Image 1 (cartoon, rainbow, N blue to C red):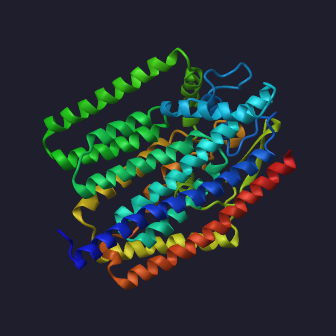
Image 2: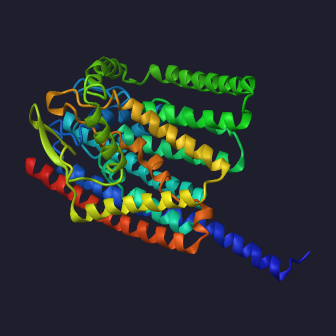
Image 3: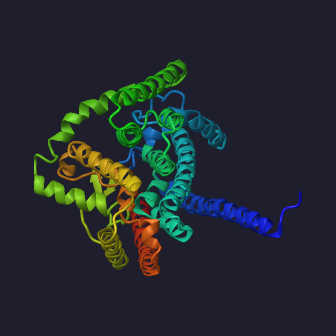
Length: 455
């Protein structure tokens, strides 16, 4: 039976729409991968592989060794405790490619090959994060132009740019955060629980940082409450299935790999011992300073980079950059004003008309994630060395705050239905993205030039 002309036009329109939804994120991902890879290559060219050089006190050497080698060699300073076990085979595969470029097997060659492999994986997963954020924003606001601008804004953010040349666990954390939020919002919109999806996501992200376990777990609990309400037996039954399967599969995977891979237990032991040193400089030490610093560094710093400050630790071969001086470039100041304007616009829209009931659960989830981060970093993340006291390690923990903060700037489809509000939001977002790009690239250039001068 031949289809009518009207049916053919509708089918062609649906096909074109789906192709657009697939082509745009593909172009976004490839473009950001090219940009991130160029930044990472520039960072590798100026890095001193004989020294323990660090950006923002990140443990790039330890993480790269843990990711790429079956067993960390004797000359590796230490192992890294946070690593998704599913990424280990990918790291080893990439390492075998890069190590063949060096005829010798000197420690400096091993370090360089490990960093190259880890950097390639980190830039790849960061590009995937941009794609995931595009689909999250498209799911929430149902506006493809806003989704594209939002993905660019998050990709050009402080977290996105700096993670591109710092191969650390936080690169993968950002990707797994994105997958968790995408699954959470999808389940809310379509009134599903997706137990298999949550189990799979928990297994592949097993071994990452504490927020990668707690924040998806919180979102899953909110979904359980939405589905089962006061049915505690039903909630406990599903939660038990989830916990048993995740623990069983993850434990079996650890046992399978334990005979051939060093999983970094010594580093975990050391991290646990260091917790006593962190808590002394948290919220109880100086509440007013802590709250003001937390708000500035985790509300603004995930998006915008202040002018980085170079600091020296121990000797001239170990240094890092931090944000203890809160100075912005002119573009950064305008970007901060843009963020404030976006928040003001969001508040005006909320006051005029509340969100749908389903989106209230989404707001509870994002608020819960922010509250968990706030409590966690009340006691962990403050510098333990004398030079670091009373200063949050702002960069390394910003990935956990990035999208929950942006969620409260993003308008709902009902709010975007009003042409005036959509035009205002698009204009503010476009200008904020432009100023963010200029400011953050200036900060990256400052870091690279300082690092090159230090040698």
